[in-house]
Length: 309
Image 1: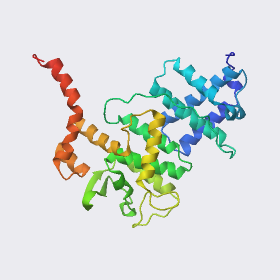
Image 2: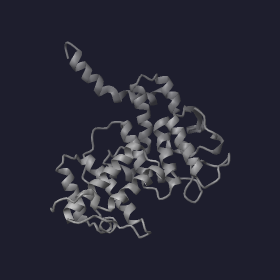
Image 3: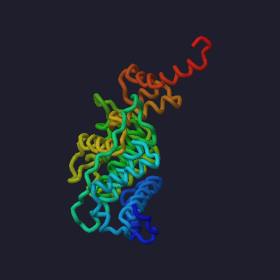
């Protein structure tokens, strides 16, 4: 590998800056995500500069092949990257290359490189940062800003309010303008009130503002690209793709966000009866399954504290 060139010698660094602006402005990614993805872009540019021994331009980015992409991942693995982190790095690289390839309207042709295999862990709820990363990754794949805002809002709603997918997609314009709570119609047409966190409310309001389709009281809020109803299969397919790109467990589904909502509330002292109301469960026994999530922790405490353990 040739000596690395000075970063100023790489015109593609300016493109990385444009990509960061695009993520921040058009896709409304969080500052953390923008920083992380921009760092990935600069790492790729620096690697290509050293690997090829030349200034990296947009043309160079468009000409990267599968062998070079694999070499970049191998280089990152020597720096201690785990399988999960390597999968996220590859996801960021693909998105940056797609931005570079699509900058002038050309058809995107990203090298087909399979990400590292990530061993599925023991069943567990999705961690808060994983839930946010999942929503960000799904939104990042959208080809229009309003679609990105839609996907981001839906997944935050599932995690932040514990809704089923069908419940989220069934919300109509009558819910507007939004308040601190949301009336939701669940199974058996049972209506319940769920909290609406400020971040979730802001995400939905941002989507409503960007959506090109009219929001009448009787129409669904979340719409497909052509203005029709949005199918739950679209959401599940998008989450499945993000799960693979991020190397998350196979249990990471839209419904798992609802499970995580319940588990995290329970772990922080939520009352089972209150949780039953929030989830819209007809029977308390359906809610009690979430107590099993803490069983491993309780057993660990018992083994370390009980004199006869």
